[in-house]
Amino acid sequence: MITYLLGDGIDSRFLLLTCFILSFLGTISFLALLKERLPRDVGREFAVNGEKSKGKPRGAGIIFILVFVLLSLLLLPVDAEAIVYLVMLTAAMLSGYLDDASAHPWGRLKKGLLDFVIAGICTGTYLNFNGSSFRLLPDGGVIELHPALFAALAVILIFAAINVVNCTDGVDGLSTTIAIVSLVSFFLVFRQTEDSLYGAMIVSFLLSLMGYLWFNASPSKLLMGDAGSRAIGLLLALLCLKCGTPLLFLPLCFVFILDGGLGLLKITLIKLFHRPVMTKLRTPLHDHTRKVLGWSDTQTVFRFTIVQVVVSALTIYVLFFY
Image (cartoon, rainbow, N blue to C red; front, side):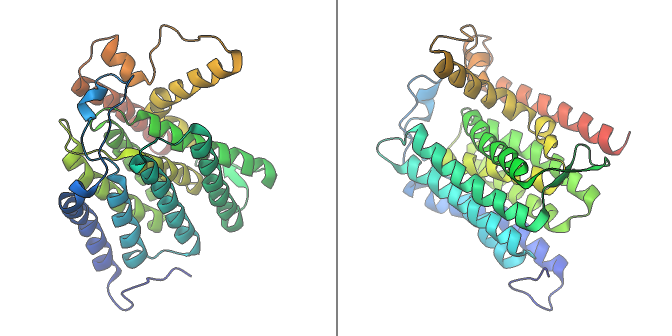
């Protein structure tokens, strides 16, 4: 049974509205108050314009993720499954924040193992509450997979989502704006499934992200760091699973896959074959567009956003309105 942690007897619409307002205003307020206490970015040696971020507060994800999680627990009708996901979002955020605050960046192996642990817990929780069935299309037939196969695919999805979003976070406002488009797209999907809980969680998270974007729009005042990007990736993967159509990750997170995914693919191929690959393509893709194509940071953000809006709009139209 879905119940409110606070507010028994209070109109649920009032609690929702309160949650949404506090998501935005709370994020802005706490970022303004606490931004100087965040660790400082040291710049990125090989990133295009990486020197611009040097000295800025980073790890702001710890603030807007905690605002979202605490408000969800207090003001949204969360059930046991959703509580586990909120705890895992906090874990993903904390692992990213500890890396942001560390004097020596964590290695890929350490972060990868943590990603797999988080992905495994989320997958086990999903299977326990939902089973191993899914649909290729929202109105298509149900496909039942063996739980072990479903678990393996779900872990891969979550692991990939965390890392492609993390890789995309390299230009002021880019990953946040793309995430907002993807989240709005998922909100429209959940409106069709009439899942009010996850629809409300999406709106609350959107407003927290917009509060962060207030400071991160170019020229940015602070950066979300791994604390924000890892949690965003995890949330997007969980929404793909909960909507019952995991393949929606491909179109609704298309730019994340294209931008961050190409970089991960390039690194993987180099490690596998021990030779240079994709030598004419600079990754992440947002570095290629700025260094090779000569796009400005603003052009990169707007053009990448336009691509995601077009892909999302076409997907939603074809699936639900065509």
